[in-house]
Length: 359
Image (cartoon, rainbow, N blue to C red; front, side, top):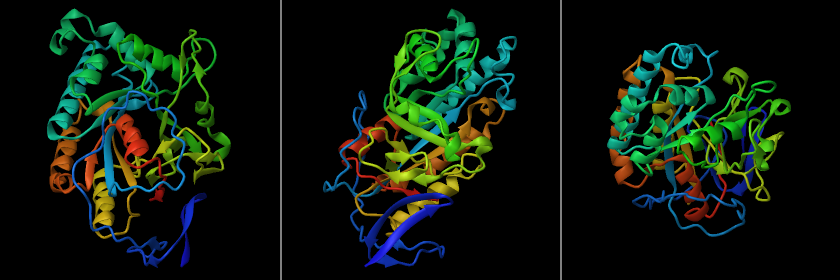
């Protein structure tokens, strides 16, 4: 028996005693797995109440190891160059072109069998409030953009909160963004669409363990799932596949069953255009028995929303990526899932058993 610890820079994943085999890339030894039964079908379900994510323990899990993948987009504030014109209240045409391209992106993914989480900051919501009048919403059944996207393909497309919070006069926090979405007809699902995890001294995620009150109102919002832990300018993001309950700012990559706020790992580098490579790599590890048996591995495929109307290849790449893995879905190796449904699957099918695979 050999003590195996997975590490990523200064972050340490959980260690375990296991028979080992050499890793293919010459890195840390990976647990030897005899995972010949990959299973079939999906376990995504609909997560209406994520609830308590505790109770990891040593519960036996019979669900085969699978990769759970999600497309994710962000829009940003006006200081972000790609979004600068899209969120400019004087540039209606730019917003409307992006609106149409975002719908095309969502429909393309849903029609191809994928899953997509759109995560929105406050300024884009303000554009919807400004420009989604009756003539604009005629193309979406009388619904504003986000209400339409959140409802047209249940289990395949959902809208989450994403916030670059601002303090002071006119400031807002994540609860304010969740309230703004709620007013558009998009109920809060508890997904934290991005936060600071590194370096530990700058973290801002532990506050999500408690209910958050909005700055602009008495609205209260509660987080149920962390996603998108990063660093300033994404220079040292903690990248991993799997789900776990981060222990502390200094031990983000350590599971603590006593905690109730889980994190879902994105695995792919969101600052680079490599998600197709990362997805293939992760599936290859499953096919060659390099992943732990009866565990849930995750990956998110990030695309910049504000460029969707400028670069049609972003939508085509998403479509081709889904098509390239049709056989993996049929074999039960890959499941396309929204982030909320991934949480529900982890709690039910995988009994909240943590796994952390750093990249």
